Length: 174
Image (cartoon, rainbow, N blue to C red):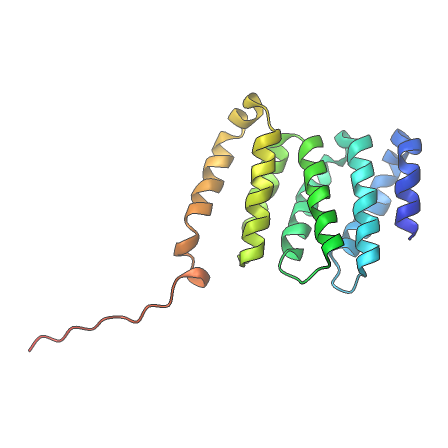
């Protein structure tokens, strides 16, 4: 609930919040990623992060990687519909207000996580948002990172966890 109050006053505070970011952001992100956090707490934190990204996006770019990492990790856990909607809104706000290259770098870093179905869906939908929101110049500047990410994305079947179970065929010569 306290995060909701801060989210409501952050548009008023705007740039005056910047010196306090290093003090409260690590705690905020830890609570967002903690398994024992309640849904209400997560929703409040996401509302605060949305408000901060809309108000002072330049100062929030250093947290893009951690936020994408947390949302990808949390994708597989059974969350309420409100939390999932809050995560989607947060990712959309982050991709709209952060530089494209920062978002692509965060996706590449998050790719090293285990790849369950929901995590892959979250990564690909985030990638889709980054591509939609990015300008041609930004995407061109990030083309090497995007190319590497697409190669990893298309190489999903070769990862040991996702290979289909096939019995080896043994032939005997008589």
